[in-house]
Figure: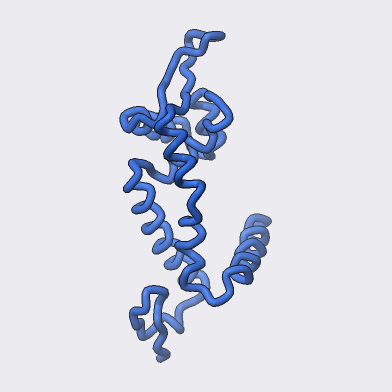
Length: 150
């Protein structure tokens, strides 16, 4: 049995024996946990950030937001409710069709989105422990493209 150190420096006796899929999945969960914590400190979730991204160019309906974020409309309804409670968005009647609600970024939502995207924390969470971040990125792109063909 091999000894390996995980990206936080802890020794794990069987980490070197894990399959690549298990290693990739575990690494993704660790990065996702750290990313969610970073967003949570700013009153956001990953789904909320996707919604803010979709709203940068202007208001959208919840249906449009769900499609842009690749989530179900019911999921987006909960995301928008939370974003509205935290002051990141408002919902207003569509002037062209009063039956529809449009979701619009507030100044606080735009500022939060700008702050998050201006930092490189999303990349740093992954690249900080790597020896060859550019090579790793290239391999991940290749893997995602190949897996997407299945």
